[in-house]
Image (cartoon, rainbow, N blue to C red; front, side, top):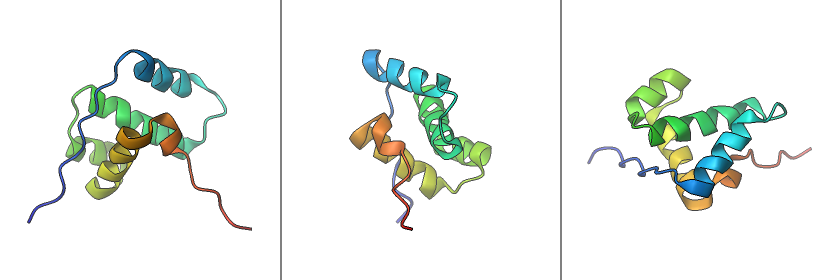
Length: 84
C-alpha cells in the first residue's frame, strides 16, 4: 500500500485572501510561513514531492500540513502551544 494521497488544495476567494494576508505579515513565525508556502504551492499545482524537496521536509509531513489546512484553514497551521 502506497502513501496517502495529498489533499486537493484549491484556494478561492476568502481563503486565497487569508493565505496572502498571512504571508504578508512580518511577525509570522518561520514554521507557519513555510506551511503557508506549502499550501500556496499545492494550490498552484505543485506536487507533494516538489514541495517536500523545496521545504526539506518529508512527503508525509507535507501531506499532514496540507490535510490540516484542508480541515481547518490558516489557523490549523499554527504551532501547538509548548509546555513550560
